Image (cartoon, rainbow, N blue to C red; front, side, top):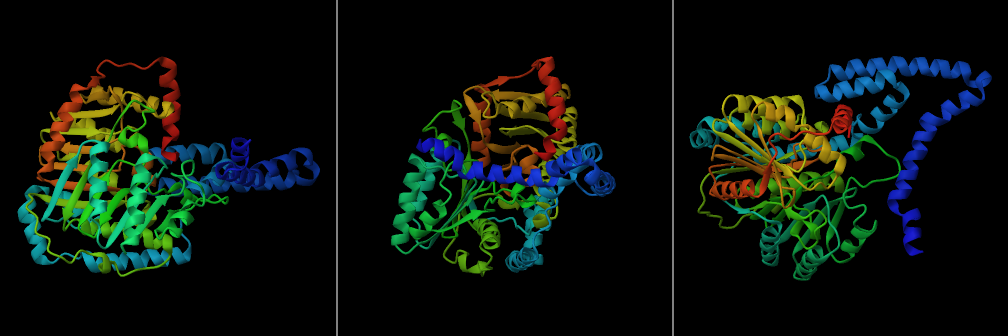
Length: 516
């Protein structure tokens, strides 16, 4: 009986009911009134229908002239022109993301606060040019787009499994002296989170400031709706990112997909892992779960501090002095290379598609090889053309995706991308042991990216994401060895063909994937 009441009166069913009510009032009710009372509402509906049609044409022209990806423009044009009432309603629910005035002011204040601490001197710029050579442009793009600088004096440790990552994470959490910041898309109650939570509570007792920010939609079926209050009661400053309510708006389409931990401003973790048991193979819903992460120690952690506070302060509606949380102690690291953690997110926050452009820059300038792992492969023409062009000019392009699906429809759409890539010489592998969730790119033994950014539309267009671009860091050799090991345990999908009906279904679905 308890499960029945939870199913009926749980948070998700209530939000779904509220959404259906919105659709009913805006779309279904006018149609019903016109049908049953044509003499009263017939002329009104005719005028409304004309107005919707005109508005649909106007919005289509506007979107075609915007910088929205071509695939998204086509999908919206079809909906707006053929189903204007539905299309316009969806547009205002899921596309028109103009933030509230008070939020806009805070975004502007956050941008000003960020620039205080990220401005490069002429000497820094010259040193970076000398150290990076022809790779300088890769890092300069990130700086110009996000204000995130590249740093030397940062050690990077590659963590090749979720179990390895979390052992290292827990050990560092225990050493925290001043503060702990944690930002995750999903937190799920279980053995892993319980062990972390016990440490966080102990640290609060020791006087350490602890902040946790989790995505509200990501945790909706994982945590109770009042869980943030439980953490707050325990002395942990907790924020639900973009808290989901019954009034659905376009902002709810932008989720915080980042996975970041910062300890005392000197130690940082970035990974593909959420804080749930399946990510460390305590449970096995999809076979062996393969994920990766990195541990940063040194100057580059400053970028993670800034990125965390940017979103935390916007959600908390209170701007802080970021410099309070920068590391001020001795910080000499015996490390090679340069490191640049960077963020990405919706256009109203970042102004351009940073993550997609970083991937494009790297692929387009590759000379020897580009190796990629991603759980989903649903990409636009720009990335497809970059990958196929690289393969055709002789670059060894390899992509590893899961062999065991977590979402069957998305799995089928991912597989539907294989043919065009393979035709150009891209090699596709599927991880045979289970589900590969790591998001990483390795290029020419010199450049690597690891973070939360999938090769799909949600990551590249809609979500707040993070990545770390590395140049000649020591950990790239470990990443390469892990790739080589993965190829041995993966299935070469050369010659793979989907069934005709599946191909037809995926062809239709891919038309609308930019909207999902």
